[in-house]
Length: 184
Image 1 (cartoon, rainbow, N blue to C red):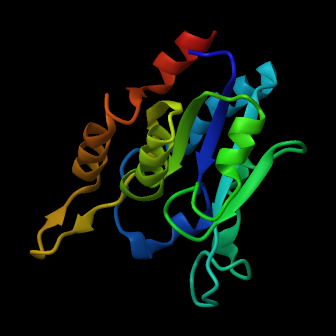
Image 2: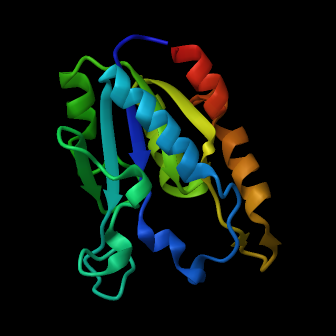
């Protein structure tokens, strides 16, 4: 893993506590993100928080609603960049790519919510832009989804299939333990 690395924490926001999302897998995701974040801070490496926003006042992600807030467990500290986005990719309509390039960062470690949506889209785009990606499997989570044929797929299945579609093509999939062993 290259020494010029950044930790990207995608959409770890209060909105995902709402019951509308249904059943979620990986309840320890935020705790694992916090463990990684603590090591990153100790080493004084680049941390970038991504925060989803919506212009719709009824959205959980609208800045006027409590769901917009980043969860306390991974709350940004002074000097850590916070980027707001309006779409699934953390790169579209933001300065994320510019920030990474300006800081000579070639390796990114991606964590956050949710695996099949903003985490996956950000990981795919990061890989397409040429960054060396590590996606932390137990530092992200998914909710169950009903598909186009009205068939429900549970959160664990969605999570694992999402990771499988990214592994070895867009990112190296690692656990929190594997990542921490690699960087210590």
